[in-house]
Image (tube, rainbow, N blue to C red; front, side):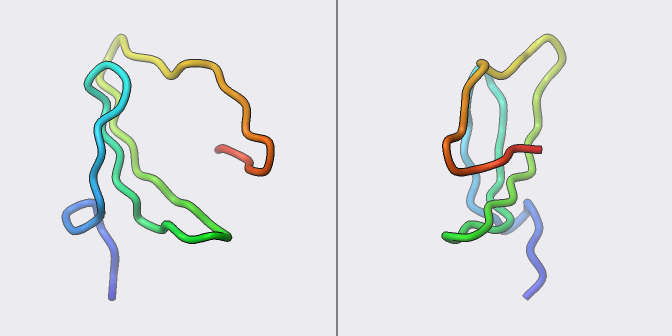
Length: 52
């Protein structure tokens, strides 16, 4: 099955930002995110992951 944000698990984070889990498993996580203008992500660190 093809995955898209229209059928993916959705979540809201930060100051009205959206995320959709396109792939969510133990080895790989792919999230499509929408961040409105003037929003930002809080600086953070992943011990076992890389974020692009």
